Amino acid sequence: MEIDSRRDYREILRDELTNRCKMNPRYSLRAFARDLELSPSRLSEILSGKQGLSRIAATRVATKLGYSNAECDVFCDLVDSVHARSQAGKDVAREKIERYLTDFDHLKLRNETFHLIADWYYLPLWELIGIKGFQNQPKWMARRLGITEAEVLVALERLERFGFVARDASGWQRVEERLSAPGGIPSDAIRKFHHEMILKAARSVYMQPMDQRELNTVVLAIDSQKLPLARKLIQEFWRDFCTKMDLRDSADNAGAVGAKEKDNVYCLAVQFFGLLEAEDTSATQGEQP
View 1 (cartoon, rainbow, N blue to C red):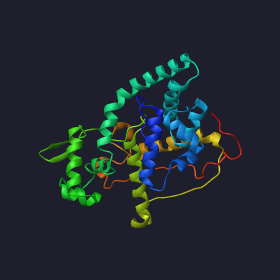
View 2: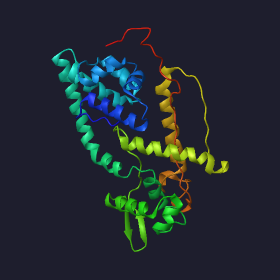
View 3: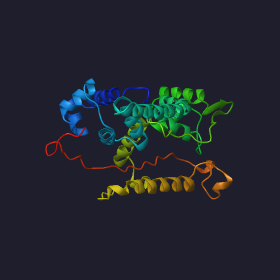
């Protein structure tokens, strides 16, 4: 669910419930309340505006929704702007929201642009243009990506419109030095992109030979206090991998694979997530505001 700080937090929750019901027709407000560790009656009154949330409760709800730290802060500020105990507290929350809006507006075009190119094949198509043996024919591109020629044509038109590719006498050429999913702004488009790539990874288990893929899974118990360290280690690996595999020809990348030598397009997706459902504590302790 995209968090827009121009919206009421209750609208965000209602939309989240609606989206979950669309994905699973058997999902209900009761199931949503269970997932948020709230009673159904309390959640119903929150959604209708009869009750509010404290910042502690808002943090818990945001965490259960899987929000990042940045998303969690915005959600909690939205709650405080309505329910902080003092007017000063509400004013501070609104000032923080205004600062977020300023940052949001700086990145808004980039995020809205990605919203239009969020289907999984846009970034691979852009990478495909730069590999050895590339053919400037939509039919060939469609066959290599396993999509329709119409989808290729629409994708090329959008990439050209936003300045990521250009067409000259020799055919399509990449313009941007690098094209990647934006970060820092909560976005349905980014979530959609990651979801589609995960589905592609699942398909590769059955459709690609083992020597053409590398899929490993490890399940381990950890200290939750070490989650920031885990994220840091993954990000460091990500940067090191991209630097060594890469990316573009440059003086800083001596020894890296040159663009003319690249002959395939791959996706590196690292998933690190919890496997346990939240404990139901509502039966053993009272609801906390």
